Length: 474
Image (tube, rainbow, N blue to C red; front, side, top):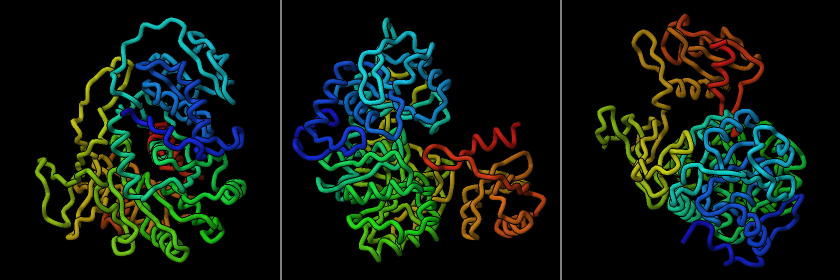
């Protein structure tokens, strides 16, 4: 059965709550998405420019249920970059903000339907290459940078990962999530997928957690779970966890990068005091996207770990020669096998008819070790390595060690130095002394700088590409 085909099992129950659309039942969702789906033929390519609103969710559900291939792009992506994607992929249908309808670059499309603040555009004359019948979703690999590289995800990938997440998070019809990211980010999309699959509900909120309205909305509608990337929890820490005050809250989850151990410990303290389950997870968009989780019962004893592979999958380490590592506490690359591993990448329309190129196995590029109990601990990225005088230094590890000194920094390799960017409140000489001590390298190996703010992607991760372009390549 195709993904999201069982929504009718939950008729009468609440699917979404949104400021513009009100309370949307599963009956309403089926009716609305069926109307939208009539403009999204099976086998077509549907581009959705996703804001943190209900309209992109409706368009996504409509496209998936209609058998189209849905391509997601973040609303924060520059319009010119989105139009470059349009040029590379020639989507048959586009769901975009209504204000975009006058763009000259979209002259090849006609307005088929207006819904809320969005419109459905259909290409007038189309002879583009066909789409693989199993392809259901195209997820961006670069946040809001506008790259034409997308991950190709199938119905099978979505079904497998969604079922696994529902199982280990113990999700059911009484769960109620709230949006903290747009659905173009795979983490938020997986929350939408799991909650709609098990008959739960989602509160759509456009405000950020730094705004009072977000917390009022969460309280008013009885939100039971909060989910976020490390930057989300850093923001919560600045606000003060005790100020959240959501009486119905019973679950918190984290993914999208490694959470600093000290901050993870603070979150655990809060959750244990409030009787909230806190689950830290690991994944990649290429795995649709969850791959591992740390069960809350193990969180205190194994803090800093990403846990173990999600149900129905396998995960192991390999050395540089491709040999499996069986000994504990040895660093190697994480290799993952599961039905949720995507079909591969696409860079243009012609790539959309490719068969599965991964065969269910993903080489992650992440370096980790495994302890004697089988728990994985991330050590960094294989490509986030710098060499100083022949010595390999893991940049992610340096950043993590600096966080232990309450210094959030971003490290980039540059010629024969490592450039370290930090907040203006950081004393450069002290930073230099600390990083020299951490790495046991001479101070002259580092170029420490302060900048007003570290650039970030739409999901809150440090934007290393923007950092390099602005400060190193300029």
